Image (cartoon, rainbow, N blue to C red; front, top):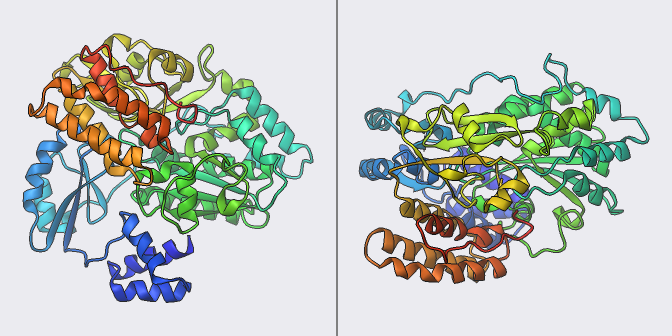
Length: 534
């Protein structure tokens, strides 16, 4: 990300990217000006106009919507003018503080409009974002402060790689970013590639509404994420590790960078294997692994056709292992204490613990770690129950891309296979709770609008199909079109699922169909999810 890094540094120093600045960056990188411009026009973090005295970005997506963001947004938008810029943005990963926003880049809670008005009048009064001290978590192999014992033991052992792979396969650990692919199989496939160099990439770009658990893992357990990457490098034969982090997670970046420097100072990083942090220039699509790789190569973040998969041809065309934050954080415990130790932290048939982000209509939104296989009802109880004593209406068990399930399925176990049979998916580990009295059709329109807004636009089915779906849902929700107008959505969803390049287009309309099914439409059956999404 040399070119994107130059643009990021220039914007940080100058506040925006003027035409002269873009020309200077092009000269410094020895690339044509159009290559610089195509990046700036694609990534939402870059701006080409001078920043105002006050910039207030208001989140509009699912968890914030359920917290009343729509009404507050319309009120706050009236503050715009002169030196104040107010605009809506996609999810910023602070769903536990909904309704959330960014004021001059600092995360803020927008529940008290009077306080927000004072902040806008005097940005110096905005409180710093303070993260709580690290908590104790189930599955931490170093509860007494000892760190990196697993990598210290494995380095120098000639049979370390095969034994690590055997432990991962025995454990049953699956990718915790959404797809749920067996971790041991993925690592083994990269290890078997005979080309070099190889890369290890940690996908820390969680950007889906309702999803914020990786931020907590990075803040509290950065050493486990780093050690998991070190063990991955040792196993697959890589010397370079990269953490790809969303730019809204600046406080988490600071903690992660401190942990990297600590590990480097202890001689665990540097020669042989090193880790750097690449900060995302924005966009939900970069959570898709091949779009992420395109960004790392200084290109527009548009997904690649697969195959080949990143394990064969990834970063710079070389074998690349990509896992998410939570997946890497689980590896040290498995290697240190064995597969059975980790399995026993789960429930029968569901190995290991799992982090869940809980948001929406609950009294205590936040990140909770429970044994895999815990029921949705039990998890909601941990989060303080449904807000204001209301009854549960529906829930999304795996983030905004998962199908909504009705309240009578609250005893479903949070497990990959069980949720698939129930008609949804574990997804990103984000349970969004919806209470009775909520207009589910408007919820469906809100979720579909997120996918429309975040589509990279590369493939026609996703670009055009998501726009069509949003227009239909908005019209019906506003009473401007009959409910029968939505009869086309099942066919539209099937076409998008079959022909979209990546998971965004493949699932964009499915949550809306699941809502229509809850509302009594028997024909609104979401199409089966592709294996790459399940």
